[in-house]
Amino acid sequence: MIPIAVPYISDAAIDEVEAILRSGRLSAGPRVAAFETAWASRVGCRWGIATTNGTTALVAALYSVGVRPGDRVLTSPFTFIASVNSILALGAEPVFCDVDLDSGNMQADLVAELVETVNPKAVLAVHLYGNPMQLRALRALCRAQGVKLVEDCAQAHGAVTDAGPAGSVGDAAAFSFYATKNLAVGEGGMVTTHHAEIAERCALFVNHGSSTRYHHVAFGLNFRMMEIQGAIGLHALAALEEGNRQRALNARYLLDAVGTRVPVVNTPDSVFHQFTLRIDQREHLADWLTRRGVGHGIYYPAIVPDQPVFARRFRGDYPHARALAHEVLSVPIHPRLSESEREQVARALRTFLG
Ligand SMILES: Cc1ncc(COP(=O)(O)O)c(C=O)c1O
Image (cartoon, rainbow, N blue to C red):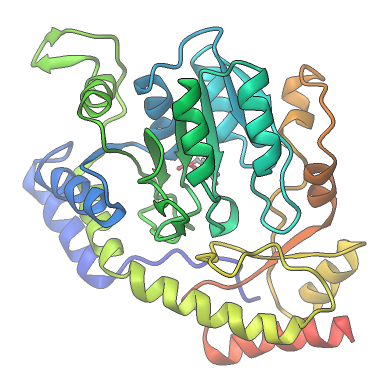
């Protein structure tokens, strides 16, 4: 079966991890600091603050821009649940904004309307599937209204919006380096920001508010990254450009195979974290692919407000997000796909679509 994602750690990274494990310097040291500097600079930001994973990066980013209990945060209902759980973890209240069918990202006109009417503290803009959400107009509106803009870049390493690289546009941004991401460490996360005060608050927050050892000047938790994560991150960063180039090539190949027969939920400027089709009765295509040895995934089978954990706490109507949750199906696009595997994926799609 061709897997939907193939986590890959280079031999050089494995050798370095072994050396670190033998060195005795395991947590937040020079490799983490170097990864913070390198990733912030790649994103075009002044500061990077490493964390344990993308979820803790989101919590730290939202906290650092000032989200507190009772605040409203606007976000997408069609995302991984971490986007919403990070808002809830701070005692804040998610308010959902429906999405565009062609990108899966929040609708520009609707989010603008909500910024003006629901009095949010912040907007958490998710760049889904590698599709950069266009943020220039939203950022201007947020600034005018005194609303903070935070980006969820867990699926958007290397993507570029109309206002600059994803992760450099908002007041702060959160990245995940989970095993299947375009920049994969296994677990890991980072907050990026241009603002010194946000960076400072964030650096304190991820380290128990500690300015010097056992001197705590602010509230915080322990979200510190390990040295082995920093080392793997630096190796993965060196391979990001080529990985994204390969994803784009694979996408072009699959787009040719699909033609105009079904819509694809990827924008032309996507970095193709996923290659995602919209299709009625997707279970037929899922069976077809399985029988032909092609792995696939559904991101996501339900919108976040409909998850059982929320027990009908959120009652809005999000018709586009619900339609996507019923129709999306993603096929392998990852950079480790061989040419023959890519052809196998394309052939399975071509023959199914007729
Ligand atoms: C959109 C989105 N936000 C947040 C996260 C959370 O990242 P992590 O799994 O590293 O905690 C993920 C990924 O898993 C994600 O896809």
